[in-house]
Image 1: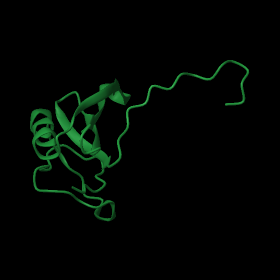
Image 2: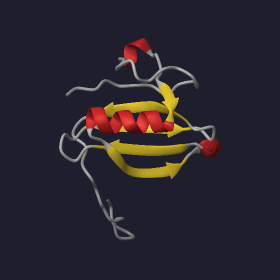
Image 3: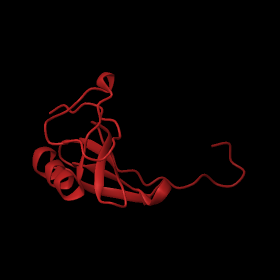
Length: 104
């Protein structure tokens, strides 16, 4: 299962028609519930992390522990979710900060 890079988008474009390449620079957005459902059903991905971005946009990382596929999304305050990037080989990390004064 190979997904291609997807770029953030203006509201209203249909997300459900398939993947796009970065070369096309076409963007994919849809209501959040549709995007989350599609990521779960088609790729087996669930939300792994989230944070608040500029202008109150919610940034989320979805991933599948079994396949390693991942997707980063941005959701606007209006509930429109856009795909920003996707790929393979997702791994969960829990790295500690280096000790103060170390070269790391």
